Image 1 (cartoon, helix red, strand yellow):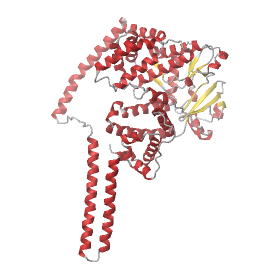
Image 2 (cartoon, rainbow, N blue to C red):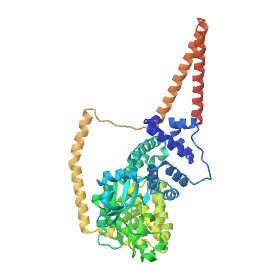
Image 3 (spheres, rainbow, N blue to C red):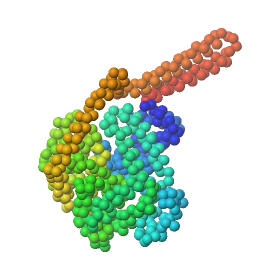
Image 4 (cartoon, rainbow, N blue to C red):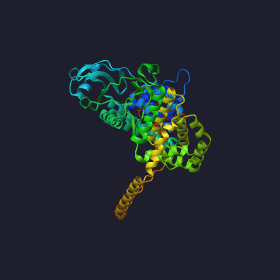
Length: 557
């Protein structure tokens, strides 16, 4: 992929120039250079106009600088940073901690601009549909704004409405991010294990799910079904007649943030009991329901009354398959029982590329951690610290977690951290252990073993049935000469770019030399064309000077 393709569309070129400018401003000039964006037309234009600002102010950590740059670049990049904060396998814990503080709060749009979105999704005017509708938003984020209202039947509700035109902005930014990721993957071999293109694609799927409020409404209803009959957890109800792809109407939650400790006495809440319920709830979501809230930071968890809690904002939710839950149970069981082999097997099943180059070294690191650190850390009631250490080991071996597992581990660590604020003596191990043992017990139940055997038998039958047909198709392609083998030589694209630049300069030099020869002949012939010959010398001089400057600049970059 050549860098000119980054600026095929004028809109993308302008946005790319803005990204480059902000990146350099916040101290990422070296990253811009390594990715190759300094070679493109937008960067050259910014340098020529002296619009690239140098970093200023006190030196800051990488995470803080990255957070500031993402905030300046807008909603798509803020959301990307929030998701990246859940990926300690890709970036360090310090960067994750810095990005977890990203505040998605912006100045609200006037109601006049939001009203068309509400009318299009609700099928009418808010004054007609609601008994009361506050036109001043309770909260304003980069993707949506939240309003308080009251239905005709008297229920207090909140209405979340999507900002107009936000989908188009995100689509454009995702195209640009994809092109940058493709360029980085082709030219930066040390980041290929991060799978930049796949990471951007996963982010795109996540943010587009978040933009479809009908998906969030279905998720909320699934949570309501899971917690039917449980008094400790409140899940708000959604109202079908008042929802659409860009509008979501649900119950008003009369509560306060879980970290608003001063409100606990007036609401009849006990911090220790709230902490226990929160940890038990996330464990139940993972091991029993296989559907968990992936962003349970204190702003998304409310306490209501009498120790009842409510999760808010179901835009970021994780889903697990039965084998995923089994792997999680194996990981915790391996830690509890001092079994490094089980831990490594479970950890590798979490990754997108389970093939590890130094498996023995990985086993040795995990074994050392379990022997010398894990039990001590667990003894201090800190499951999150154990998860952090194991994730660091994976990162050192350039193993990337599957997105659903990174969300899961982040959710567990976040809930435990909040719980320790409420109750410093809380131990999460006794809360998780019964769920782990239940998963293991069910796996070896006779009915489950019979079901697994039947499923494996069916898989072998399908394989035996499809194998002759696949072999026949392969032989037909071979006989017809249609069997192709594709080879991808690493670094060949870079070599082609170098050869392209060299041939361009050679052509440039030949043209310059030809002008000089032609001008010399005109001057020597003395046929009255001396001005043309002198003009040719001038043009050749300028072209030669431009060629020399281009060569010098390419060596300095």
